[in-house]
Length: 210
Image: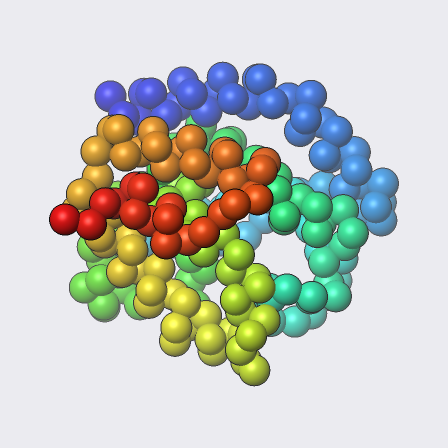
């Protein structure tokens, strides 16, 4: 039933957002006449790999760290706007329709950050990854947080990622349909109107302290 609902909602959202998707695609192409979409292999449910889709937000053929922090000069002017409002994630609705992802679920990671021998990772991978989850919302300013580390990639691997995994597990233990709807609503709200965002208030709204 969940899969049927997510397929139906994903298809409806794709149709509804088609004009916006077209405008974003045009803006990305006009920026530097390069590819509109960015594709990357991520680790999904049960550790299986799949290709995730995003609007391209970086300049072409730019080498660098796999983690992006605030101020990264590889990001294009159009890309900065897309990242600020999370619009670069919209093509993942196609991943939802395909069945690679759900609307709500732990964000899929790139293979180099995943340890399939770790019980925490195995627990997180029992569910379908999603476009948004509690950790994604709480860490919506992740790029700014990572910019505070001397080595952003190490900071992500050793500090941010373990904290996100802990939030994933906590949410999955207390997950309900109502909480999923609240999470989706807050994600949309803070994506388009980020003012007033505070991670602790968001976490307490979704998972109240006992």
